[in-house]
Image (cartoon, rainbow, N blue to C red; front, top):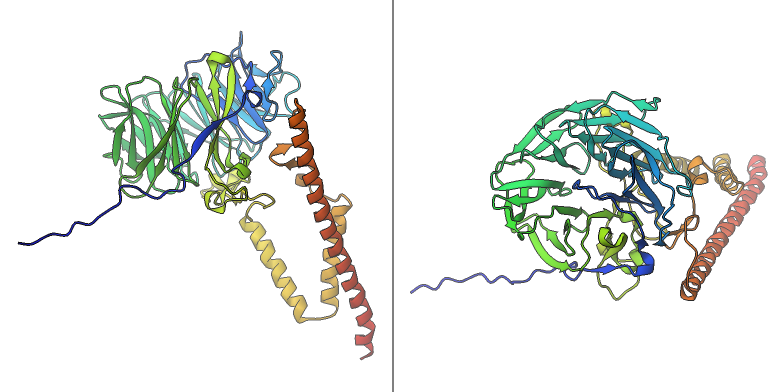
Length: 528
């Protein structure tokens, strides 16, 4: 009698995100009295960046949306100035990922408009856009910015076309897109890019999922699954997989996972429930977490994605009694890393005219920076210009660290400059005398130039952001506790800046002494 050994596998899996929980903001930190649009379009109606929050509003005649400072919480003035240049209802808004003061909007009036927001917010109604894009023949329902190339915008409309626009042109009204893609036979429902923007995926009312190469317009893959009707699609970072949410043949809400290189059969299908609201998926490539929020639901499910079977691991569910109409998402660079916040939603609650921030938090005892949950993430610098991308170049996003005080990772050109400086330093060390003196003088002049106000245009346009708050856009404290908290934050900031200033003064003194030593040693070398 032979006894076969069974391999034992644990029923649990180790995950640092197993206990992530949702923390809704208190009433004072919400945006109250916002007349959220009653449009039935299956969009999010809200866009957020670290400075501003934009939300499409209900209005009589034409279309409009609000742009509020992220820190301007509480009751919103009913006469708050709006951006109201469209002649039809606004259907979608998206912030430029590389410019916090630039936002695009599309409308039922068949146009796409790009707006420049003043540094201190919208103080009067804006009606004249920076750019107007005219090319679609029917209402435009969806817009997306390219994830790595600067000033490249995608739009799709009810004329079943996807158009690619280059905003780096002198004309204020652009009538000719750089590419028009006409593979769809019905309305495009969603659009998603891969990491470097070399491919995009779409879902369509004809039930098909398509992967398209944007510059050539070639259709690379097409899925026509009879058991799954997809409404939203996402590229899952660098995992070479697609995620779609939609309905089954029995109208149950369902999601599916696909191999990017083979869309013939889904890798996984799973039914959720019998509700009718559209499922909005949100994916965080840094933590590999996927969030599913249903339109009209109060709850939100979240999962962890793996590269091996069973691919999707259910974590838990956030429950609320307030149904959401749409969700805005804060970019990673706008999160509060001191509280271990890994994702932040802005939930539109139309029943209460309320926008409620919802933070997803990893419970940790330590208040120090947690490197393991904050890897390098996509920053706010473009990797390519529009012309470089159109010429056929692909690059991944320029990465940045979320650690307080750190800088964005160097781009290729900056790394080249750094290499050149290193070589110059090596040469100066090998040749004493005038080369070392010139090097120190150059360093000292650069330092003095910066202190005298010889800053670049980028530094002049920079506004101080400390402790996650922009001082130029902060709302005044309402309670004594808030005032005390802001006072302590300000004192800490002053202390840190004084330390930094003292360190720089010491460095300047050291360089001056080195210069004097060099000058004193020159006559002795000449006499020898």
